[in-house]
Every structure is written in C-alpha cells, then in structure tokens.
Length: 211
Ligand SMILES: O=P(O)(O)OC[C@H]1O[C@H](OP(=O)(O)OP(=O)(O)O)[C@H](O)[C@@H]1O
Ligand SMILES: O=c1cc[nH]c(=O)[nH]1
Ligand SMILES: [Mg+2]
Image (cartoon, rainbow, N blue to C red; front, side, top):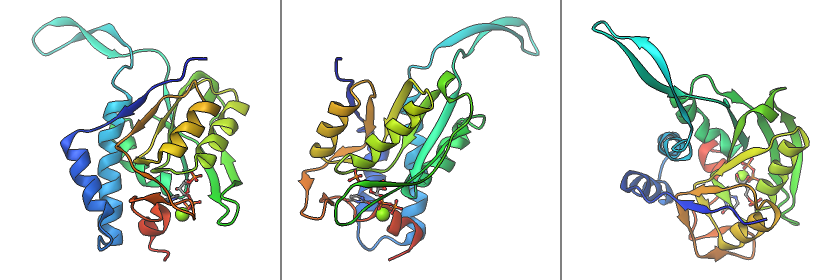
C-alpha cells in the first residue's frame, strides 16, 4: 500500500504558539491554553478536504444554493491523557463530532503502549476518525490506537499530532500506511528514554501539572 503523506502545518500562528509551549518555564495554564488553540488550528487543516454539497437555503433576501459539509460525520479520538488537550479546540469548530476515548500509557521501561480504556461510538466505522495525540515519539501509542479503532471497524482515520520524531513517523507509516499524519513539527530524534529532542517534555504531565 502507498504510504499516506505527512502534512506539516507550518502556519505562523501554529509555529509561534508551539514555540511558546516548548519553553520549559511555560505555566500549566499557558501550556493547556496553547494546546487548545493549536488544536483549533490543526482541526482547520485536517478538515480542509471534507466534501461539500450544495443545498437550498433562503437568505432574508433571496433563495440560493449554498455549500454545506456532505457525507461522513466526524469522530474525534484523543489518546489519554495528552490528546484531550486538543479536544475542546476541535469541538468548538465541530460541535456535533462524536468522541472516542482511548486510554493508553507508555511503559517507561519498555516504551510499549499499555491499554487501560477504550470507548468508541457504535457507528465509528461510518465516520471519519481524527486520532489526537500531541506526541508521536516511538509511534507505539499511535499504532496501538489505530489498531483499537480498526478492531471496531474504523476505516477512514487521520492522525493529528503536534510534534513528531522521525523514528515515530517511520514506524507509523510502516504499520499504518493508510493513515495520513498532520503535525506542526518534525523534531531531530528520540533520546535514550524515548523522549523527543528537543521536544517539549512530557505533554501529559505539563498539561495536567502532574510533575
Ligand atoms: O509514540 P510513543 O513512544 O508511544 O509516545 C507518545 C505517547 O507518550 C505520551 O503519553 P504517556 O504515556 O506519557 O501518557 P500520558 O499522556 O497519560 O502522560 C504521549 O501523550 C503519547 O501518547
Ligand atoms: O517527548 C515525549 C515522548 C513521549 N511522550 C511525551 O509526552 N513526550
Ligand atoms: Mg505522559
């Protein structure tokens, strides 16, 4: 199967906000607000190609045909915990989206993803699923999440992250060649503990103030 693309979102607003988030002195409040704002901007990009259909409406002045989004509806699927940081911003733009929660944490020794929760809408197979996690490091969590979604029948999946390591992109594209990626940056590498360098540290801990 041909590998889907990596879409680098280099809009100045996204890049500026990401730099603010990387700063080790950014407060928990600031970090969370920025992730939410970037979520909104990335939602704009990942939905750019949604098909439109022309429908009849009446303005106060005249009848017209106007474009509305057609076809499949959206499910937003955050990987807990850090993926939740994108959710409110995206739901502000797509308020009727359904939400699938995917509970995964990364074992600090093995770096394998450990599942602890999964709840998806019944009709997830009929929807476009936007998988959310700010960090694509080894790729283990994102691959495990795609496999859970596919086990429920999801076929049309897109992955949105904030930062990606080249190692994570390679692994994800190998295992999930049918899932395109949107990211705000591709960093240099992973360190010995599987953290993205230069990265921004542990996204979940920074967002919830747990370290
Ligand atoms: O690509 P990977 O190597 O799998 O790493 C990325 C994962 O690590 C972080 O989650 P973490 O396990 O820290 O859980 P948390 O969000 O609850 O802190 C991050 O939010 C991703 O889910
Ligand atoms: O750099 C990293 C790698 C995995 N998870 C994070 O939150 N940060
Ligand atoms: Mg974490």
